[in-house]
Length: 449
Image (cartoon, rainbow, N blue to C red; front, side, top):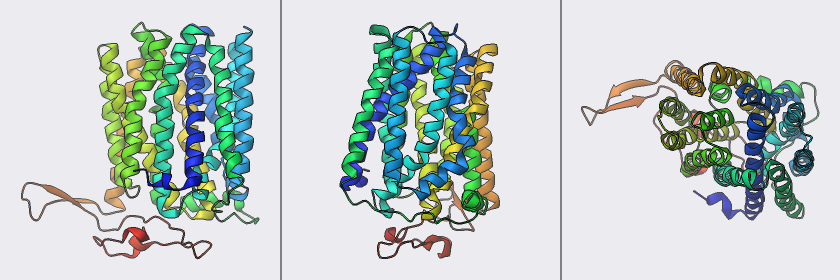
């Protein structure tokens, strides 16, 4: 489960990122609570617009941000973006402390945050390939998610208490100081020889190469469609948590607690993903169906504490989907294109929110937050059916009676699963596609996956 931590470079990055992630979750919690209760009169649509502005740049800038991650030193990119994020948090915190913040200030802040994150995300996601060996990449991706969701357990609860005790402005100030941990980790890594992945050459068509590659991979297109539906309509946790807290007559402390309880399931999903040898399409589809059931269950909960308990299931399903999809995309993509393909993935996952968040917010305003959760459940059902349909049509999935156990069904496939791309140490870039050439049902040695 923790094999990537055997790499010293990854341990340094993991610790710094964990501290920074705690601050980021504190800030995200405070930001949405400020919009909902301090700068508007419980307006869920305003929260949806804030979320949309924060994630829209990742969709609009995807051709540029992916190429930046593939062509330039990712450590230097992260030094610049993390410094910018620190300054943005500090500026908004000071604005809130002096009492001059207005809703349009939060909209501008969310937009600038989105622009910086659009550059930061592809570089941060693919930075693990500079820190660990190819065989441990899927595990490192899952542990990154575990770090992110460990912070989600801590950050929102701390933010909820701080909002009540000292005010929301101080949450942004404290978050700014947590960036010193990740900047310190990057400074230490600057003095160490990292694993340099192949860089994208300067050539014509570099901007669209990632799109062409993704279009040539039907399995990636299916993952992107599923992730879009979940990201647009299912990942609107700020809207779900804040509006359901208000629905049950709760305050900022309980709102922060909801986010932390959700993170229990998220952390569990990330750690279980880390245990798996590699990311599989079937896990993405099963987790999507599970997420739909969890969202519908949460919509029907009669009390605050029953709803809080149901968010554990939502967090587990959501993180299993996203962590497995992230690992699948990274480990099956050619290294020289990994940044651009991951930029497309992140844009689809996060860029769907500008479409879905205002819709979810409007539905919550008009019919109540439970209908917003119901819409998320329907989107997950559609995504799961698309995934199953692809397995049936493209992979030849069939349900058959188990040959040894009469009443136990089994699944069979006429086409082998897509194999991960491994980087062989003695060569700059080598693509090993052992499973694609293996006969159906054959096993491949772990070292060649």
